[in-house]
Amino acid sequence: MAPRPSNRVFLVLQGPHGPFFDHLGRMLTDAGATVWRVGFNRGDEVFWSDRAQFIPQTDPIDAWPERVAALLDEKKVTDLVLYGDTRPIHATAIEAARARGLTVHVFEEGYLRPYWVTYERGGANGNSRIVDTTVEDMRRALRDLDLDLPDAPARWGDMRQHVFYGALYHWFLMVGNRRYTAFRPHRTLTVREEFRLYLLRLALMPFHWMDRRRASRRIKTGGFPYHLALLQLEHDASFRDHGPFSSMTEFLEVLIEGFSAGAPTHHHLVFKAHPLEDGRVPIRAEIRRLAARHGVGRRVHFVRGGKLAPLLNDARSAVTVNSTAAQQALWRGLPLKAFGQAVYLKPEFVSTQPLAEFFSNPQRPDSRAYRDYRHYLLETSQVTGSFYSARGRRQLLRQVVDIMLSPDDPYDALDAGRPAPRQHLNLVK
Image 1 (cartoon, rainbow, N blue to C red):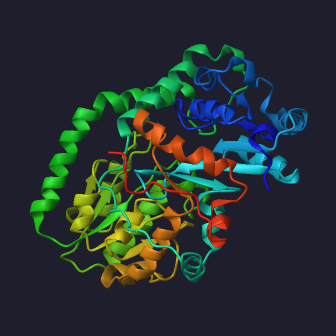
Image 2: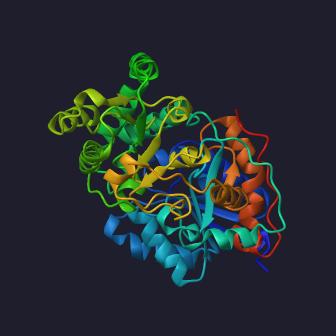
């Protein structure tokens, strides 16, 4: 049996931009638990309303391992809560929590975006339990369950809210971070550069929309077969920590070389940028340069963000490092080639062909196996809602707090035949 909520002490670290972790902390408190928040900068502080339960982390970063260990012991912490498990400060805290046998709650962007977020215990993405779970294991766990699977969504999600909260968060870091002189971003850019890119992204949205429409029209009216490359953010943890490439340019080089070597000469290659791509990497220029080098310049296209479904509906196949958007390709039965470690990297539905051979004659996935896998995710790690919109947060909180307070990991609960109640069909629009 897990401790009653009144005996649970949650230590919350960094969360998604915006107020979600604050609302989560308040509901855990309403359930009877004690909740502490560690803030590493002014943005963390602004988005936490309970000042009495806020712990500013102003020590030098090299003191963090000792500091977090002391906090876990001093506050008698039972549960650690964080967003993303590979940030250095989070990885250090997880190590300390595991050494004490504490429960680690990890939030991430949804594996099935945009109407779900990911909640797991212990680790996410390449550190998820799903990585080592076979499709047959999943089928055994689902043997007594039935679910009318919702359709794959047509768009990425709350992009405007996501960008807004990202810009606001970095504004607070830029103008009010004097108290946190030891703070260092987990990404390579400075806070000022991050803020400038968020602001630029907001300002250029109308121009990007027009550019996207022109590119999409050329592809739609071109009448050619095409393969779709699902790009990620170079600084994203999945690409950086769970993929084989040191840079986006390296991935583009491999992809274009494989396409030029294997694809029929009437086929084209379409690069679909991540919806939050902000220009810190000159992707379009690199694609043009590499396509020209390999003699396929007229057969390669670039599309900024936007809805994925129209491009997937007419695609011949999809290629990615480990983007969660690949699941929309699998839902449509498209052949998929992935290079990195991902929760969906199962031999039943992800191609093992060499890249040139894949572009020449891609093998279709086992769609029945993928639907069983997707059903398994919807019964375990995927919770309906979102971090960034008010409606999405409300829907998420209605379910995830009870899942966090449950004595069972969601995977163990399903294996034991007592999965948590779910709301899959009342999707956030």
